[in-house]
Amino acid sequence: MQKRLMICSVVVAVVGLLGAVLIYVTAGDDDADENVQVVIVEGKTYKIPLDSTKLYRRDLQRAGGDAMVLFDDIIRGFSSLWHGKSLAITMAAITVLVSGGLFLAARSMGADSDFENSQPVQRRPPAPPGSSS
Image (cartoon, rainbow, N blue to C red; front, side, top):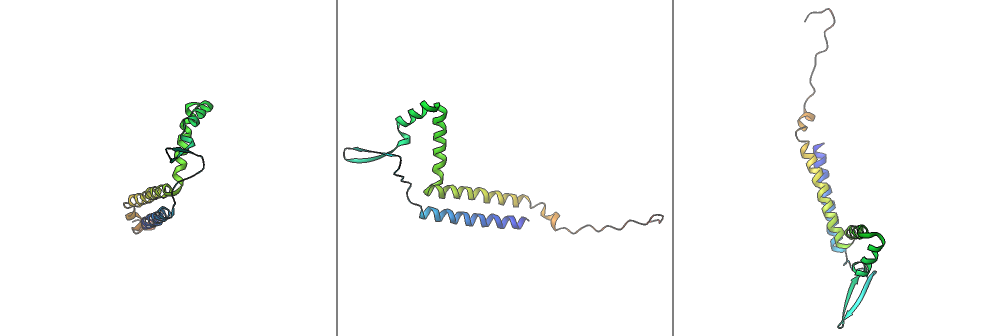
């Protein structure tokens, strides 16, 4: 069982990290042109996400209070982990955690492996009643 967990740990690490590298290399920039306000100042163009404007945050606070603003920040932060290069980093981190957990589980079973590999104890059959031993 210990060897199986070690092999699973290595397989998860290799497959997960290769997948994360592949995603990182092939992922484009996280430039989403939707929900963006374009501002031109002195001939330079700036893109400002609508969710970071004071008007958006004020309307959000009016609708649901400070808790709604906090939850909106948490939801946007969490959803940003699943796109582009951030997805590759998230996948690598999850891979390291899962592989490390499997490795630690296999390592903790090391002391029990002596029990699994030991020979069964040979016991004598009980003596018939009335016989002296």
